[in-house]
Amino acid sequence: MTKYIFLTGGVVSSVGKGVTAAAIGKLLKERGFHVSAQKLDPYINVDPGTMSPYQHGEVYVLDDGAETDLDLGHYERFIDISLSRVCNITSGQIYSEVISKERRGDFLGGTIQVIPHVTNEIKHRIGLVPKATGAEIVLVEVGGTVGDIESLPFLEALRADALRRGEENTLYVHVTWLPHIGATGELKTKPTQHSVRELRSIGISPDVIAARSDHPIANELRDKIALFCDVDAKAVLPLVTTDVLYEVPMLLESLGVADLILGRLGLEARKTPDWSGWQELIRQERSQRPKVRIALVGKYVELQDAYMSVREAVRHASLAVGVDGEMIWLHSAELEKGRGWDELRKADGIIVPGGFGSRGIEGKIAAARYARESRTPYLGLCLGMQVMVIEFARYVLGSEAPNSTEFDRGTPHPVIDLLPEQRSIGDMGGTMRLGLYPCRLVAGTRSAQAYGESLVQERHRHRFEFNNTYREALAEKGMRYSGLSPDERLVEIAELADHPFMVGSQFHPEFLSRPNRPHPLFRALMAHAAEKAGVRRGS
Ligand code: GLN
Image (cartoon, rainbow, N blue to C red):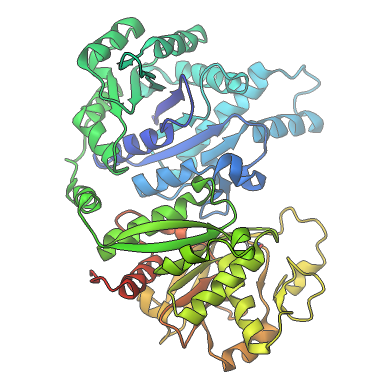
């Protein structure tokens, strides 16, 4: 029987419920279990693909092409697993499924209600995770906090699901926040007590309370939460914010959570965790390393969560190269107005990340031009690759006309364009190239050297492609197509021959970077940036 760990949030959101879930998953995987994780998002949107990164941070893409919440990135990176589209569900998906079943007549004219129709659909989807991923233990995180109107059907579904599965197969973890009162220097447990009471009123009693705070949590406070919330003191986890993200699993380990959870679920560890590699990452992250500055020229730089996976991929690569990668966040629209250039000039490496729409495009093109002319290492991620191609075409053709038809439909030089078979599709929905596709590396290129492999699989999320009409003209002037689809029709990676490292990929390498397995392209960028910064290079 599959074991389920349900995570709910109390008091406030954004206190690290996703990281807590991911870290618990890591502890269990280290003990030899096949773990998976699912996020239930109570908002009505059908998927996060069309949601503004300003409100929800980045859209994370899975192997199977699902566009998901960024918490799935935490799960994949911490636990080192690949998730499936069943691992992220929203109220919008649930309701649209229930409504289309009703329209089809599946309910035989019955009255459709939240209980049982909506909750049954939720329970059904929770049950799909072990089937899709083969997991023995599934972590299920409910977005938002207890008390939100939208969360109610999800919590009711969990309650009913847990009852059906039995106590030995399910466990509840409630993640709360302890506010700090500056005047008295105290941490307060009352909001935690209230949120546990709220949870109880809908029939859920937490087994574990993870109490988050930026301040040290005294033992008396732990005892107080245990007493007032009716859980064992050992099951109250004081989770004080760590300066290093990777410390979270170690903190949970030191609190004995894994044994507590396994004991409660009637499981025994299959192996002793080996934390040596993970400890080494923490040690490196804490060590003094030479600074290497990476400018990220994007559109949503005010909210860095919008580039969560890019930032993490830079972190992974920095640790591997032995440098301290410092991000400089630059707004491309500001560059257009002539602002931010001093900052850009300080960068040892430049990343232009993915994006949609024309705002700030000329600023990104200008950043690519600067990278080419100043020989600053550059990595273009999807849109960043397209921008690099547009910039190079403008230089080669001696004209400002080359563009992507996404930004200028009538450009005489559509160097980035829809594929011919896509042009007839009027509706933008469902026309994106999403998920894992193979890419063959071309021997002798910088990209092939970085990968050290000839065939790789990478995650995509885009509509436009390199226009093959321009392949030859740009190649003559030094553009190399270092990664191609196996049938050679699509340019997957482009690079410049006459440049230390100017590489753009049509896919998103950031989604496959892992703490102990940095992505080869990010690693190569960091190594070249370190060289430019004049600091020693690691392995
Ligand atoms: N807007 C571009 C396209 O659709 C790039 C997308 C991206 O960067 N993910 O092709």
